[in-house]
Length: 232
Length: 341
Figure 1 (cartoon, rainbow over the protein chains, first blue to last red):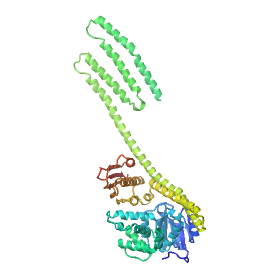
Figure 2: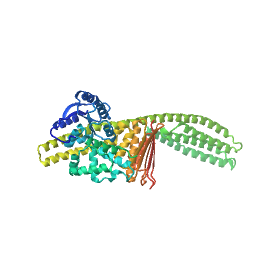
Figure 3: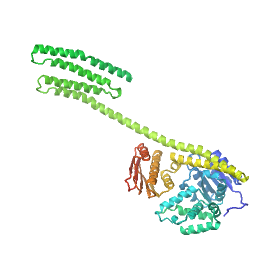
């Protein structure tokens, strides 16, 4: 799994955003950070044309696009992935809805991201997320993960949720894993050693009775599948 | 217009009062003549008295009729007034002439017939007018409510495309500035200043998002009531289960009202039920949307509180019905029915 390394091939990205200001800003931000923006589009059909022509690694999509300004972006992104299954998707939105994240995660094996738009202002974290998703990883906004954990928690009978058996540190680790963070990133964020993170993860998987998996993406999926499964 | 009317009524009243001195003098004169001539025999002045009283009564009805404000005046009232005066006058004649066979019954019956026919006709016409008016008001109110719902969605969209987008662009530029400064090894104070500016922009975005969500939640417009209520339940964070059966989407105004019923009921539950399980049930059948939000909490919610009163108004504007039961210690149940036209 590509976590870091100076000799990465440049990630080839297409941006779909109807707002010129945001489109240009996003393009500048990514270009500055060594990401190759091959094309931009303003709507769904534009994305499909670019995907057919450029075969990019990753599509960064706004949710609301013309003409209906509802969830056009998600529909276009999923459609694009049907034509190019290797295409990673990073959906940006001013609102995050757990329902949309489910549709994106269920859409295929390649990388998926779903973030609030303002996360682009945390440049380092955002660029990391872009690279991670392009490489087949996951980047879920902390709001989505938080609400999934609450949902899972409330659908269990009070007091008997396996989530209750986790320590505070293990819960924090679980949330970060669900967001798609690598062990190294979790260790950085929680200010603990890599060994401690690995210990937490093995505890979590044991307590929640999850199958041990190799690879970050499979691990995220296992955790999310657990969180999304309804208790009833 | 109303000044003119009061002038008329004042003139009429003064005219009536002016009758008093000549009438009183005439009555006294008649009494004196009777006292001097009849020596306690048949009291004949009762007949001229009757005539004088009749004039005063007719005049009185006329003044009463003209002194009322225009909208509440119906021709029928004056007719009724004159009819009463005539009936009393006839009964008086009957009494004064010995009171044997009660003949005034016939002219009075005739009068009732004459009066009854236009009354019945007038009533049916009023009812027809009312029906037309009710239809018209129902139609225009539904139109107003629909316009309001789509206006709210437009405002939300304008916020999204305007202020929110600009703030996102701003926070992105601040993020880039921060990143470049950090790359150049800038002064920690400078860096902190930019970082704080970026945090402020992010906080503004977040506040604006909550505001827009309160105006018209985007997921409601995009995905409908079921998804919006589920999202609401997730965000509420307490122990909420949602059970919704909605086969096709109700009109936007109904969706909005239903959403805010659930939102307010969940806020209330969070306040009063202290983490007890909350069940949200929504069904859609027979062109009606039904909502029940029930918790096993402490109960004791105030159905007259501002939140619930606002909800009731929202629901009643759609000809719906809302009930809040919250006996102390037995949990709270909010029920609403919304017709979908």
